[in-house]
Length: 408
Image (cartoon, rainbow, N blue to C red; front, side):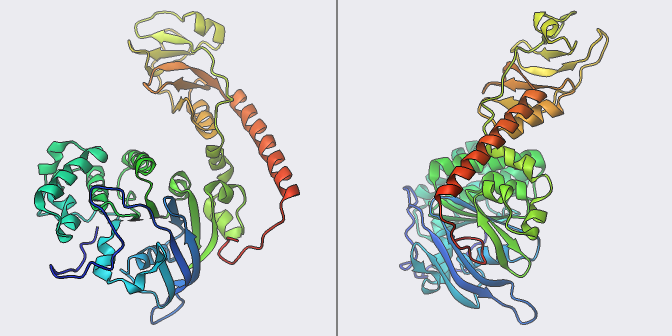
C-alpha cells in the first residue's frame, strides 16, 4: 500500500465516509469517456466507459501495457486522467483532495509495500493514525484485523522481514481494510507469491468478501485468477480499450472477438466447467486399503481394477497402491470436495493414477471415488441443459446493442 502524502492538517472533510469500527457501505464506480494519454504514442487508456457494481469484485485482466493498472490508479488519483470523469458513489473523484481520497480507499499492491522499520501492528494502523484515530483504538482494530486475515496476535510484534511473502500480503490486506473503506483497489496483489500460497490468498479474499461485501477492483494478468475471483471481468486489449466486460462464465463461453478468445486460451471450455456444479456426479465406494493392510478389501474387489486407496487412521487419503502387493504408494492427484464444480471432478479423476478421483468431506475424510466416464457424461448433460436454456432465453428476449466496451 502506498502511504499518502499528507500532513497533520490535511483536509479530510471531502473524503467519502469510512468508519474504522463499522461498515462503511459499498460504492459504485463509473468511468465516463476516460482517456489517459502520455506525451508520445498511443493513449494508455482510450475512451473508457465502465460501470463497476457496488459490493462486488470486478477484475481488470489483460496483457502487459494494456492500461488495466493505469485505469485502477485513476480511481484514487495516483494517476490523473487526461480527460473524462470518474465517480465513486456518485461523486466526481476530481472534486476530492487526492490525499483524502486515497485515505478513504484501501490499496494493496504486488509487493505488499510494508514499511520495513515498523512492526506489523504499526503498519496496519498507518491510515488510522493519519486519520487521527487514537492509538489505543487503532491498535485494537489492528489486532482484530490480524485475526480476520488469518494471522495470530503474536505476528503483530514482528517486522516485515520476519514474515513470509504470503504473510506480508495478508498484512497488506489488513492495512487496506483498517479504516473499513467502501472501496478496495488491488493491483496484482498475489502475483509475487508461489502457487500454493496464491491459491490460499485467493480463497481468503473470497471469504473476506462474503463477510464484508466491499467494492473491489482487482488487477491481474492471469485469466484463471480473473474468472475465479471476479463477479464481472473486464478484458483489456492493447491500446487501453475494454474488449469485453461481462460475467466470467460469459467470457469463457462466448468471447466477443478473436483477441478475447486468444487471451482466454484454447482450454476455455475446461475453465467453463468451473461454473457447473458437480452435484450430479455419482460417488462410489472407495477401494480402501488402511495402512498396513496386506490385501484389498471388499471395495477393491468390487472395483475390479486392483487399485487400492491407502488411508490413514482418520480415513484421510495417503495415495494409491497399484495392483501387486509389492507396488509402491503413488500420489493420488487432486481431491473432489462436496459442492465442487465439474472442472474439479474431472481434474480429480484425470489426475489420479487409478482413474478414480478421490472424494472427501470438509474434514478431508474419504467419502468415495468418482469415475472419469461418469464425470464426462455429467459434463455432456450440463452442456445440453445449458444450450437448451440459452435457446429458450434467446427466443423470448430481444437482442440489445453492445458498445465498443462489450456491454449494453
